[in-house]
Image 1 (tube, rainbow, N blue to C red):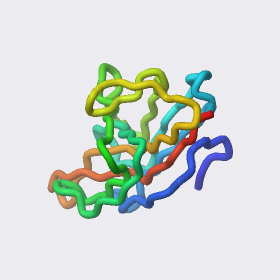
Image 2: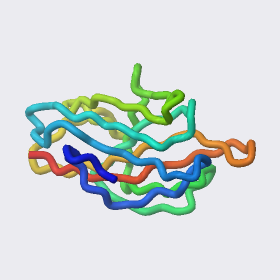
Image 3: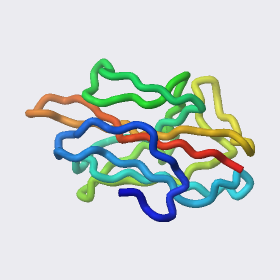
Length: 147
């Protein structure tokens, strides 16, 4: 299920989306905060679905989530990757990816840098529709402990 070069550790399962599959998140690159080389990717989403990545230094498990059929696996105050070029569309493949900047991690109160020893959690939110009714869902979640 997980790629051999994943730097993320899974900790929370997703709820199946309208495709019947569960959205899957992966992180590749380096755990070194100084390297600033992390690529987040998601797959198994509905085609042409709008979505974006979320992050938090706290894990959680909220189900159900109002307006969603999914499970929010982040706690605390999650940050959203919704800046220019960060919101994505899954296109025909049902997937998208984003190279993140470890010097500017989003939080509700502003951007913060990753420090060695920090553990950050990641998940993706996406639009979905069940029997023609608009809703949303989340992928599974991962944690990455940076060096």
